[in-house]
Image 1 (spheres, rainbow, N blue to C red):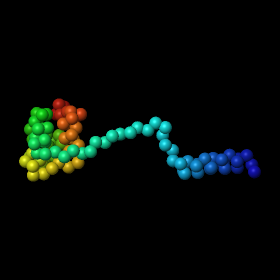
Image 2 (tube, rainbow, N blue to C red):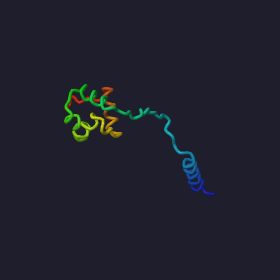
Image 3 (tube, rainbow, N blue to C red):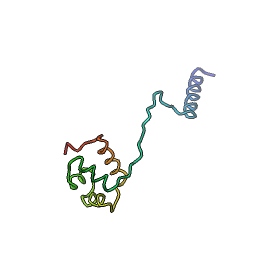
Amino acid sequence: MSEAFDILSGALSEVMQDVKEPYLPRHTASIKIEPIRSYSAENIKSIRKSVGVTQELFARFLGVSSKTVEAWEAGRNKPSGPSSRLLGLLEDRRISMTSL
């Protein structure tokens, strides 16, 4: 057959091999995602007090209503996943509220 056919045939074979064996980067990074913690009313109040803010300011930072923070601290409700994740970051001092 022609040289062009041989080139195209070889290229097609390579593509088909790539489809069968997906490309994996040589350098892969692994990320450890910690489980979401559960917080008691006392834990939440302690975290808020440790950063030195009111329930209203704490609520604004977390993106919830002040009534929600009040309910958490009274033990009537529990924070959702995203709120719990932010509480964990505040507790571990990975984020701060000093810019507020």
